[in-house]
Length: 123
Image (tube, rainbow, N blue to C red; front, side, top):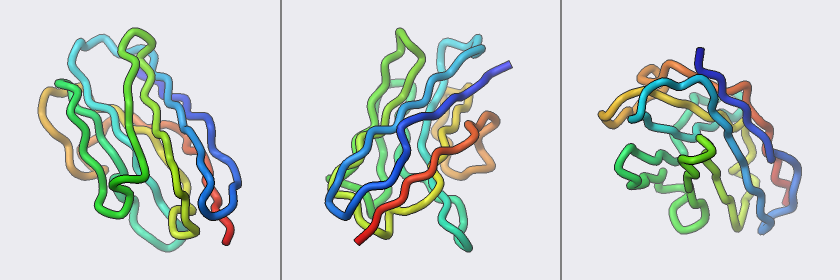
């Protein structure tokens, strides 16, 4: 059974930085995709960043140039470095994993989810 454990959320002021981590365990497939989503109150869950099996990354337009997703495959861990945080980045951030060589695009495409970590940015 795949388990994802996130850490690194917290409260920062506008312009600050945070680094989220997501450690995966139990995956038996060599090829998998990991991604970060976020969900603010009253809004749909949205993809923030994804790192694909070949190592390429994709970002939401709203975070391009500010957020960076990286992966340590030896540790089965994905990170999200978030710089220049803004109040509109406030949300619960979730890590997701799908054992696939394809490119998932929606939350429904992912089987495994972490419990979420709260990020709050004050102005």
